[in-house]
Length: 84
Image 1 (cartoon, rainbow, N blue to C red):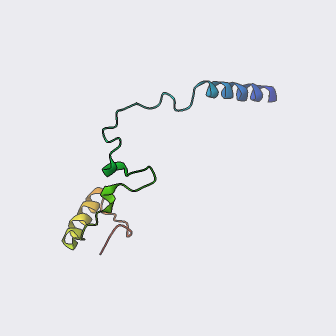
Image 2 (tube, rainbow, N blue to C red):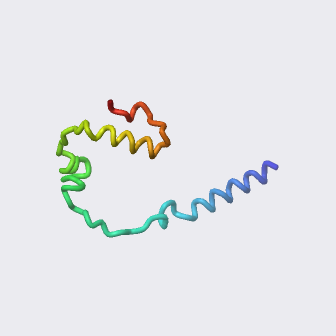
Image 3 (tube, one colour):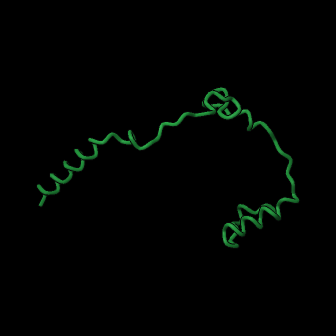
């Protein structure tokens, strides 16, 4: 019984190591925004330039937003999402 478990474990390790993880599990696509500071910022650690804009709150939209949330989530609105 122990020998069968060892053989099964070794077989699994061999099978899993033979396929390089995530090598073929993605699609290479051309990034149309590559190098765009507006989208990605000046470096990978910086915020994009579009994040610097601050928008004024519009309280008249809160009721509409809550109606949309109620419709999407079936009337169950988490208290953390409701801004009243």
